[in-house]
Length: 511
Image 1 (cartoon, rainbow, N blue to C red):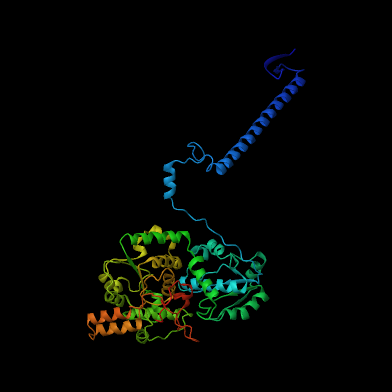
Image 2: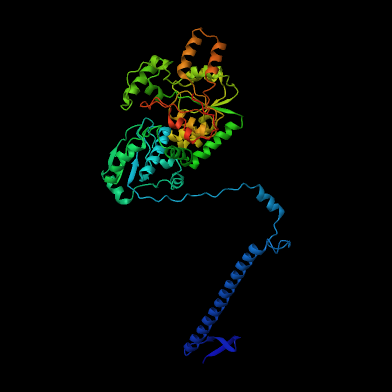
């Protein structure tokens, strides 16, 4: 009825394929069992062989690392051999140090501190340094600061759009715990409006935060500081406090990779033409409206600036005498005045001058004399294409970050007004080795300019006086001016963080 065709032998047992119909079921089952048994044996053999091979490889590798340099040193085909061309290439490759993450500081958490920064990029930058320092000395957890989105610039950027937030958190973990957001339960409470919010007193020292703010944090678990500008005193702080402010500013606050890379591109384009100067020409519409400085503006422009000043309620000073303010040195230099000063300082007209600023009020008409004296004026918009800057449009803080990077790397930095960017960049350049920053004495300069324009001074007299008076105003080491009870009039900590600067004995001056 049925027949079995033999197809092979294995271990003396005949294996076949059953042909035909009924009556062959039991034989088929035996054959299937035999096949499965055979496959299992093959799998076991393969697995055992693989384990043995890997064990041998591991042992040989260990042997080579341990004895290769000693026993097998002379053998050209053994572990110590290395192709000379490969060795040469490796020698040329720069070593990249491994990123070291500091250990966490362990402390009893007293609660959570939320902060909303106000102002432009550099005002917020200084405020972030202060808030990190305050959080550390209160032993609280800081929530990543919220940036200002309601000021004149209306920049919607979040912290992580400008700064490398992960680096910010990890680089400070040995000082203070920083979270991107509150724990869920507390976050829900805040979203429902259950949060204690307040502005701290300006120019306060750490003791104010210990005595006034810390009890509130312990009581409410979360406290929100809704203003952060100039909330920590310039002077009278411990050395540890001042050094932590510097550490945050110079190490923890790193811009995003996108901003950093674009900054490097701009610097490379400028560097390929030799030394370059950054001119922080603070002559934008908002600056003039806020300050009330209208030197060189026509009647229509004066009216426009006045309307703008009244339109913003947080600009408290409304009635301003522009002429008096200018004579007191409280106005930014105009583009025309700046051209005269650069010439008087003997700035080479062949230098590339990068304008670190927004749109200059009055446009080409106001820039004409400066462009005539210094034809190699450039801006980020002239060095980069629209595709490069497209992402930054309507993001003034990100644009300012780009200017900040270029300003740090310039051979000379010249601000025409002592605003927040001028101060913070000046301090950072001091930290980088007292890089040359020409700090213009505007009160003296406007008087000299007026004398020159009315014929009272010759060009030689004018130029010599300008150079002489600015010989000691080039960012050299100096002591910070301290004026007790008048913090607004004394030197700003971030413009001259002398506690954090490396200098030789006797190098400090009092000017």
